[in-house]
Image 1 (tube, rainbow, N blue to C red):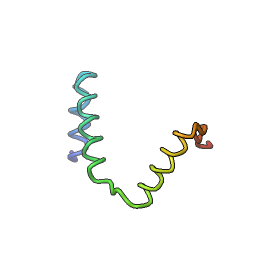
Image 2 (cartoon, rainbow, N blue to C red):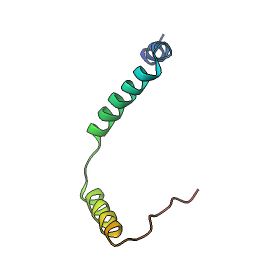
Image 3 (tube, rainbow, N blue to C red):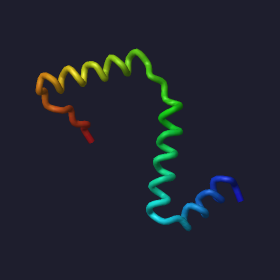
Image 4 (cartoon, helix red, strand yellow):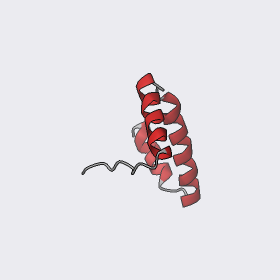
Length: 62
């Protein structure tokens, strides 16, 4: 049995509260590995400017 299969089997035994705690941990681990690039920072600043100006939020097209 692979490590992932073992973890998956164990996850199935956890409560919803425990699963939410695991989700938070995984989200934090993944976020820590993300790069904060100049392009990403520029996009954040643009979004903040648009929000402050009262612009309507962009919606992703399906």
